[in-house]
Image (cartoon, rainbow, N blue to C red; front, side, top):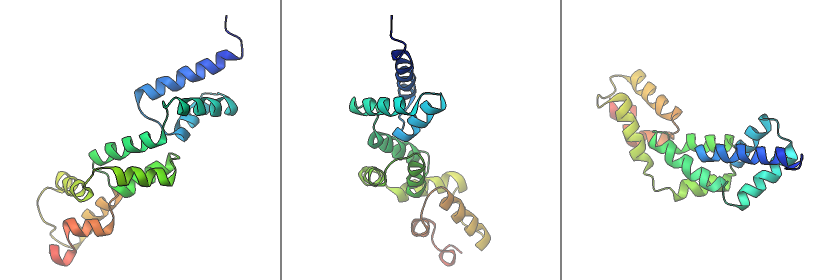
Length: 156
């Protein structure tokens, strides 16, 4: 029979492994989920250290996954960076994942623009600004937006 102390530890480990089996998680995200399930902070930290030691939990792998997933969904690097920061991933890990990704961000922007707006050009400044604003909310910088859809004067 298991010791009474081992039972919460085993349940926490099983819960964490089930979450990780579904998808990658950042250390902070998994820690929050385990804490929300009522596991003691000390137990959660020990478990997270163990999972990182076993390479079952990796912020670097999580960042690579998110960069690939979000770019495939039409999001830009600004959006991905912000989302990873919100999920507790360290800035150097984020920058490494973005730099290592073999992604042509202008191509992602162009594809998202075509998917959402088609090939019809902007008819006036208001329409151009609405399109640029949409792309900016998707995480693309102003320079990238201008490179792909042009300035208003060039578009009109």
